[in-house]
Length: 290
Image (cartoon, rainbow, N blue to C red; front, side, top):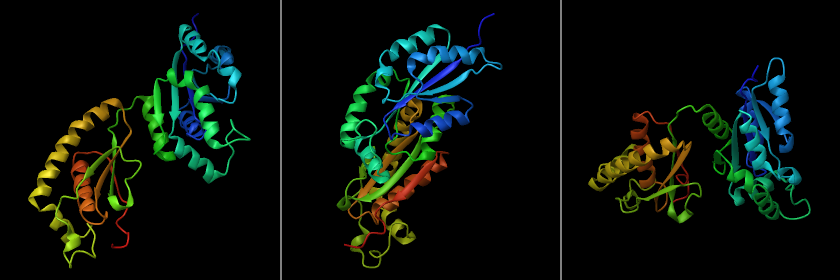
């Protein structure tokens, strides 16, 4: 009698990138999770799980770079388990170096691969050790700009194959305060009429009806909004098909109080009317007037 088919998800990634959160999300989906099982023992573990009563068919195995000796031969382990009829997928969690450094500083933890060195040294060494895991990844997820809830949602989406359109994060900002580091697309609206030079409107923000009307009713703004919506609708199709969970769009003006706020809100309203999930953050709207 043939053994039942199993599904194994290997979860690898940089320390601090959210591996524990990913494992928790998989366990909530019904996967049997095991941390730091040496890859060389994975084949025997899978076989034992399939022979259990009742059989355990969905397994999530976390890979730890600290077990350097066990990482050797990981590609062969994956190939062998697949040859045995199991469905094997590799999830790799990536993250920007500076974000990882900040996370370690906030938690005051020592990097596990550089206990006597710097966090940067530990990250560099870990990237090298995990090259094979990253190369084999069926899913590679950058967690730099994801909170815990967004990461869990992304994992569920990837593993279940549930279709869901990309969530749009709109961020209004002022160029004088710098570009939002999370922004993947940037649009400069400093050429639009500026309420800053209207005494009655200057103290207000783009969330005010009169300020928004001043900005949005101008012919240049109307033309911009039409072109931006068409262009972004075109891009959304590709991002949705790729399975991109979140897309962050920055809308910038000089101070981030008037024009960028009004335009971001107008775009959000249009995208929501299309049934898309949209988050809006006005980063600099409360900054002091210059």
